[in-house]
Amino acid sequence: MAKRIEVSDLNIYYGDFLAVEGVSVSIEPRSITALIGPSGCGKSTFLRSINRMHEVLPGARVEGKVVMDGQDLYGADVDPVDVRRQIGMVFQRPNPFPTMSIYDNVIAGNRLNSKRMRKSEADDIVERSLRGANLWNEVKDRLDRPGASLSGGQQQRLCIARAIAVEPDVLLMDEPCSALDPISTLAIEDLMTELKERFTIVIVTHNMQQAARVSESTGFFNLNGVGQPGRLIEFNPTGKIFSNPDQKATEDYISGRFG
Ligand SMILES: Nc1ncnc2c1ncn2[C@@H]1O[C@H](COP(=O)(O)OP(=O)(O)OP(=O)(O)O)[C@@H](O)[C@H]1O
Image 1 (cartoon, helix red, strand yellow):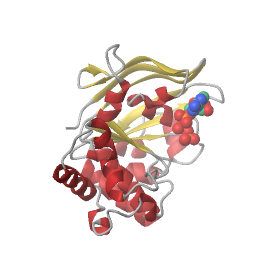
Image 2 (tube, helix red, strand yellow):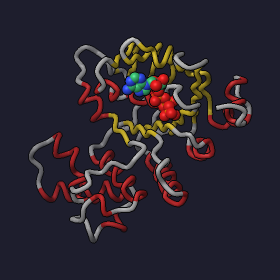
Image 3 (cartoon, protein in one colour):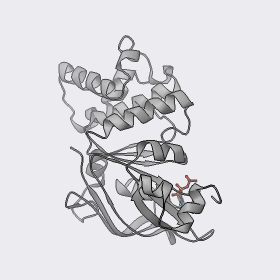
Image 4 (cartoon, protein in one colour):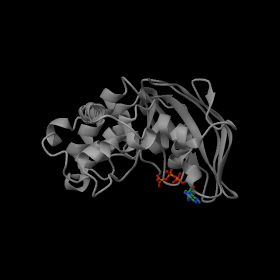
């Protein structure tokens, strides 16, 4: 079930370094939210803070709140592993387990979550997830082949299948198409448009046409200089960001005048 995420006054640190400052934003369910901005402005850091993925780095921490449908994801009694189960992530480079079969890649997260699963149940999840990732027809006759035997675009769809197999509420995607050719990129974009019926999707992208094509809302991050924290400068409907943004910095960035 897709869920709404409310972020308030979020500061994100790596040790003493304040990487992202003062982000407040409401991310709508069943929609795609794109995050754009120049290199180093904190897009990935912010994305990872949504499912507490940045915490795997020692010294990384946040101040402020991230609330998903009323649940404070940084609450004292909240297990970050549970948060990551509810909020899945797809990375820039497809990262299937290379020697594991296609089938086992898809079901890997479910096996971690529940040790005992009937074969028929696992078969259903694998088929449903691969269909959901628009990959079933291409791989149904070779599910026992290694994940690494697929093309880059297929591997990325395999990673999406693995992410949706555990039925998360939210999918975070960190430049999911940057390693892919234009045809595979369009396949992933079509897939995102289908998946937003079921999931809340947040995507970091350097490709502004992609943000314009797929997202309903866009956030523009920027920073004042090296060593300065990144900030969310503008958050608006995507059509407005690309036609009539509120901030001059947004306009300069999207028109290619900097960044
Ligand atoms: N593991 C880390 N340890 C310390 N600082 C980090 C770490 N990861 C990122 N940073 C710093 O945090 C800031 C934000 O980086 P981040 O990767 O979030 O930016 P970004 O907007 O996603 O950049 P890009 O578009 O190049 O991927 C940068 O100054 C970066 O150097």
